[in-house]
Amino acid sequence: MIIGKVVGTVICTRKNNNLVGSKFLIVDPMEKMGLNAGRIVAVDNVGAGINDIVLVATGSAARVGCDDMNAPVDACIVGIVDDPQKIVLID
Image (cartoon, rainbow, N blue to C red):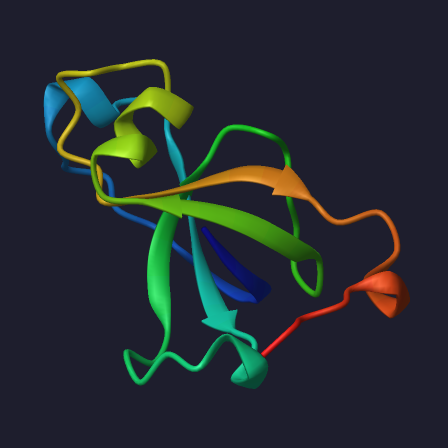
């Protein structure tokens, strides 16, 4: 699971049939997550928006989060953080 900030949107009019109706957001993982991957594109089905701090499931868990095991999804926003000031990461 990744914690990150939504920094943009992706518009694509042509996509896989299993992704029709999906909203795509660009997420910038928090530095403290220790990821070197950079920004990621995630399917959003929880109604996140720009500047929201979100929880992102990746890999096969992302398909579960999107309620479609046949969707070609590698990242899915599964939650919006209520109070980013209370995030505690333990090394």
